[in-house]
Image 1 (tube, rainbow, N blue to C red):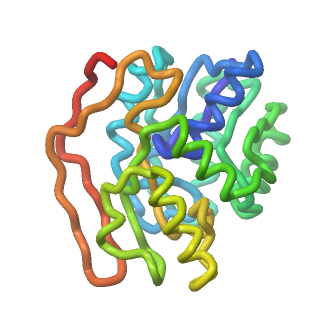
Image 2 (cartoon, helix red, strand yellow):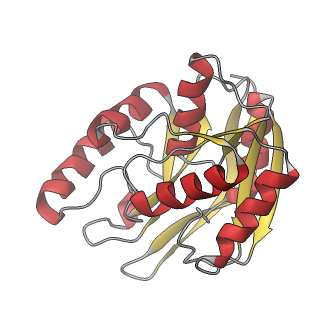
Amino acid sequence: MIAALFSGGKDSTLAIHKASENGMKPEVLITMKSYNPDSFMFHKPNVRYTSLQAKAMGIKHVIWDTEGQKELELEDLRNALKSNKVTKLITGAIASRYQKDRIDNICSELGIESIAPLWGMDQEAELTEVSDNFEAIITKVSAYGLDESLLGARIDRGVVDKLIALKKKYRINVAFEGGEAESFVLDAPMFKKKINITSYHITWDGTVGEYIIDGAVLSTK
């Protein structure tokens, strides 16, 4: 079974896109739903709407709960992979050794081929590819230099330029692999339908903010 570890964000969606172009379209998307807002491994904001993204792509979807406790959450991932009889796993890792090494170790233990189509990709090039081909929005910011104005902003060329400027000033990771921000994809080339957000609210404490989707529907493209 070819699976993809799917958060609904730009990286895991782009990884699926690239793997599919190379003849390795996933048969199932596995979303780890963490109850820890500070999970070391798994994306948290708006993961319940990954079910809409999976429908838009026409791919089977599994949501697997985890308490999100450091290291223990890896056992939950291991169980999810075993239960779904995964033989190949696609992930969206770009530069984070913390995540990739742990996933690679689990895959090695279970005899699963670990596939990371974005690994080592230039981060500015990745952002540009997302801006040119996807409709993706920023759903969380949590780094100095990233402010409330970015919440809900589409990752377009203007936002890419802003992030690159902030990288030069504050040394942020523009691909967000240091946890600087999170994203959510509303439309992509492999989506048969697009996602329309019908309601949302924003939280902001002066440093950390989230764009929380309260309602969303699929609509024709």
